[in-house]
Amino acid sequence: MSARLAVVGGGVIGSMIAWRAARNGWRTTLHAPDIAGAGTSVAGGMLGCAGEGRPGEDAVLEFALAARERWPALLADLEQSGVDTADIKVARDTLLVAADSSDAGHLRAVIDHLAAFDVRPEAVDRSRMRSAASMLGSSVRRGHLVAGEGAVDNRALLAAVRCGAREAGVTVTAEKVCRVDDLDADQVVVAAGSWTSDLVEGLPVTAEKGEILRLSRPPTAPPPPDAVVRARWRGRSVYVVPRRDGVVVGATQYETGDRGDTAPRVGGVSDLLIDATELMPGLAEYRVVEIGSGLRPTTPDGLPLVGRSDARTIVAVGHGRNGILTAPLTAELVVDLLDDPPSTSPWVARLDPRRFP
Ligand SMILES: Cc1cc2nc3c(=O)[nH]c(=O)nc-3n(C[C@H](O)[C@H](O)[C@H](O)COP(=O)(O)OP(=O)(O)OC[C@H]3O[C@@H](n4cnc5c(N)ncnc54)[C@H](O)[C@@H]3O)c2cc1C
Image (cartoon, rainbow, N blue to C red; front, side, top):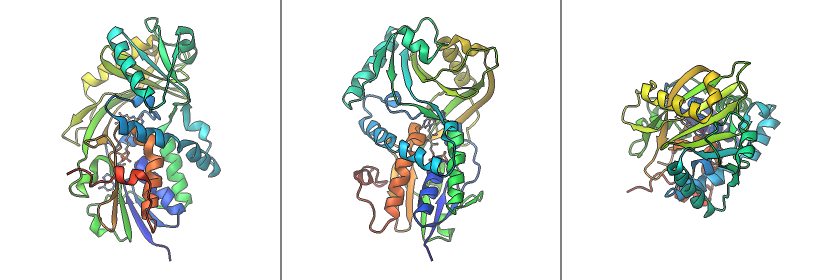
């Protein structure tokens, strides 16, 4: 009889771990209650490495780049289980742009920082930019194209992974877990996002809130861009991620001490609308179909906490701005940790949940 695994948390991290573990022979139960503010369904779905690159966050970029390498295999795996990944992949490239000279200076610093990691976005002129994003406003004269850095529809991805998990034999329950000790399992993985520290003591995880909008395109409005467009816009950040029938516009980012605070703030929503319609005036014709907000589980150094907290429990939490992108690598590390003997990947030491004093 195979060993029993309980995975706590039905976001992208927990669901992908449950799927991978079941395929590795674990008799797996996934605890996936609907909790307001969970990040996975709210997110933009960008697979952002260059787009998320920030000077001073070298390790975060390294982890993102390592995770990006896992995506072709993940998409091939989903195809093999009968998923049409054309519904999941929504963009292949990313365009980085800036509004004024101060924003351009900020973007230049990011581009210089990326060069140290051999990531070299290509400088492109207005006509190249317009072919990737015809709605771009006339004030945007120059940009940088990051070929191959695309985006997925995170909701379609989660549905596909859950479906793969069920097919692999995972039992999915909406039951909320109150105490890890009560779970009837040989091993437990806690991947409960911003709520993980309610279940495992002493983890330095905080919640960062973000507002995000979903807009649909009426037939007469200009088409969504082909690429993800990320802008530094008068000192703020805004991005537009294509969807089949519209776009996602995101996202604000600020710490919140209150995880019950999941309602979108008026100021955050109005900033997004102003910045997005200046960046792409054609968006003014789109319809607002959803105003959302969610919590990003974050850690002091920006890297997730993935590893053992005791002999029966592994945690996988703290994926911050990049949990969609980094889920396949996290799932691989957790499944390796469940093996006997466990993985020797260098990431195991770097992501050790006990690395903070
Ligand atoms: C506005 C916004 C935009 C974002 N955009 C992107 C992006 O473009 N690209 C990207 O890579 N990342 C993005 N992110 C980050 C990404 O969404 C997160 O890193 C990711 O969702 C973390 O996944 P998770 O599974 O750890 O947590 P969550 O998605 O928060 O899921 C946690 C799950 O835990 C479960 N849970 C909680 N408590 C319990 C309990 N007691 N018992 C059982 N289950 C429990 C719930 O089922 C919940 O679904 C964005 C986040 C936000 C907020």
